Image (cartoon, helix red, strand yellow):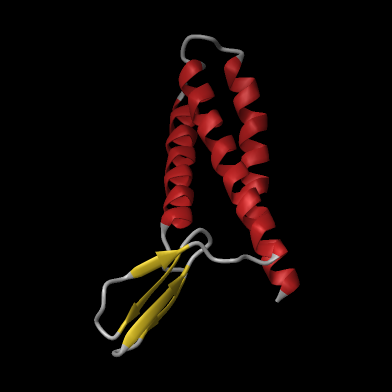
Length: 121
């Protein structure tokens, strides 16, 4: 395995970890008021009212946000498969060829949500 493959594998793994962290983090939009706070994410929305325990629930998403969530999850799956194929290319050289195309698909899927969100704002 050459250095470029190792570096790209590490970068794909980092992108995969950051994408997963962005999905599970409910703090995309946060109103950190003193009396209470509301945090909104794609898969959870949490609120704290006057010092009570934090209550979390799944939000009702509009269609463009559901499409965004779909593309982010598809990008995560593509990046995970790419990392697996890059590891497998250590023993089977032809796996690197498939990893390139799946990585390209994953990068396009990861970039699509920004276009979807800005077109509906």
